[in-house]
Every structure is written in structure tokens, then in C-alpha cells.
Length: 436
Image: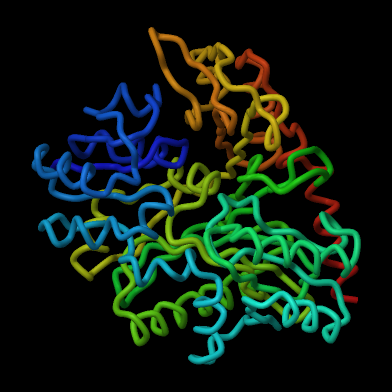
């Protein structure tokens, strides 16, 4: 079978790695990702050139397309490919609004009475947004309605000093159309621990994957600006140290009801659904959805997947997806990023990766926002690559991962605390205090 994977980063590298022994891979990517390039036939081009992607898919006579990033989904890449007779793992433009339009997602929860919702307001008028913040009177989260690559969310108490700053940022979003829309979503600030659950969806049924905790802050100790994700971990039992089975099941129920609501509203949702949750004192609440695999979270779940990913993808397309089986192993993923990221990472810097030594530590490399030229790997201004390890327990996986990062050389930094015992104990204690 010929499969086209659309996308350039580590998420797409992880997808390709999980598929390459089962299928003939084709890739459409904006930069030459060295990991994807060596296991696929590829073309360099823009993922946003919908007609160009369609032409490449038709010329290559692919049997299926897997859409990695969110931006092409927003612009209807699945609709275009399906019209050309190419089935896709990815939602249609309307169904993808679960991620690409935060107002759509929040209103969907209200209309269809999906559990796990929160207090919110959507505004395209600065005065109305300011009045909502004043009337609410508590800490809020301010988000652009559209896509911002995981970097547009600002929280009072972290990135915003007070409600005055929140009003100023809301005005900035509306006035400057941050995220592509002159509108803003203002939500209550949730207190708890964040986690994610990814699932494959065939339009009716949902197959959930192990829970993962991401680390979105740029610096150790959860300090600094929000990034696309600096690393993540998962546990051997598919849960997390602060997340029990009851809370996990409640999160999956929210996702199941969301899938039904989307079908009733705009038609079947097919592809990957990523739920970002906050575990609060009264249970999990939905922070937001992504309409594709998470990055870095895909790199936690795909290396431990025992079930055929090709078979699962075929089930998504055919509408008869079956359960997935995962190895009972812990995983740790640590991103190495250019110094200055996310504000001023330097592009064009040489990166040396000793993959043999990383593999000797039980690790693997997933290349992200880099470019291979003349057998050299060069940075862009975004995340460069991720090192991932698996082991029978989390501490071993973390220690292996940290040792493996030493075999990557360049003007890079990473969060060495991702997955560490100290940081996890801090999160457990945080949940104990919240539930008092």
C-alpha cells in the first residue's frame, strides 16, 4: 500500500517510523526532514499548497493520505483529497473546527451538553471583552479563536500580571487579528494538572491511547513562555502518577460525546482527536482539542504501539476501527531546541546527532524543525529534534533519555527536568493540595 504523510516535523517522523515497514511511504514536507527522507519517497513543498499536495498524491497513486499538522486541515486538505478519490486519516474542514475555531468548540459543548466544559465568552468587540473580564472578576485565560501554533494562549498569574493585562491582550488579539480572526475567547482559569488523551476516531467509534503529560513552558520548573511543547512522558499503565482510571475514563467519555456532537453538527469526525484536559478537584475539564496527533505526545504513544498502525488507519477510513494494544512501558520525550526559542531561536546552526550512541541508550531520534542540506542538519528557529526513550519504569526511561541528549551537539538547550522524579512528585503534591 502507498501512503502519503503530509507534514515536516517530529510528529510526522514518528508516524512515518511507525508505518514504514508496512507500507510504501510518500512524504510532502516543507523542509527536508532527515528522518522522514531516508524512509520515504518525498517532495519538498508547502503543506498549505492544497492543489500541489493533491497533484503529488494523484501522480504518486497513493492509496491513503495521513495529515500531520493542523493548518492544512483548516484549509480543507482532506476535502480536496477525498474529492479526488484519496481517503484520508484526518477530519474535514468543518470537523477540524474542533481545533481551528475555539468558539465553535466551546459552543458545541454548550449546545450538545458535553461534560467537562468551563465558563467562557467569545467576543469580537473590545468593550464587550473588557466588560466580561471585569464582571467575571477572577483569573482568566485569553486565547485567539484561530490557530497560533500553541503559542497564543496567555494566562493571568503566569503570562499576564492581572486582569488589566488580560484586557490589553484581548484588545491586541481583536485589533490585530491574532490567529487570523478579529475575535477572542476568554475562559475561566482552571487549577489542576494538565494531561492529554489521544484517540483514533472512525466517525462513530473512538480508540483511546495512553495518557501523556506535556511540558509546554520553555524553561525548567515550568517557567517561561508557552511553547509548542518541550517534552512529555507516559507511564507503564497508560495512566499518570496523579491520574487514576476513573478520571481517565471520564476524559474518554467527554471525547466520545464530542465525536457524537460533531457528527450531529457538521458530519462524521475521522482521524485523530487529541484532548487536552485539566484534572481539577471535581474531575477532568476540557482545555482544548487538537484535530491531529500531539507534538510531542505522538512520540510517546507510537513507539509503544503493538497493534498495526496501518490497520488502525484503515479502520478509521473504513469506519470499523478496532482496539489498539500498547506495550506496558514508560516513555520520556525531551525536545532539543535552538537557544533563544521560542522568541528568537537562531536558524541555520549546525546540529550533530550521534544516532548510534542514542540507540545504545535505548533511545530514538525524531527530527522536527530542521533542514538537511548536503548531509548536514541545520536548525530553523523552532524546535530541532526530540529524543525519546522507553523502559520498564519511568525513572529508568528518564535517566536513559537524559543520557541520550548528551549525544546531540549544537547551539541547543532542553528541559532536563521532563519526567524526573522531583517534578512528578511536585505534580502529585499539587493535586493533593487541590483536592483538600
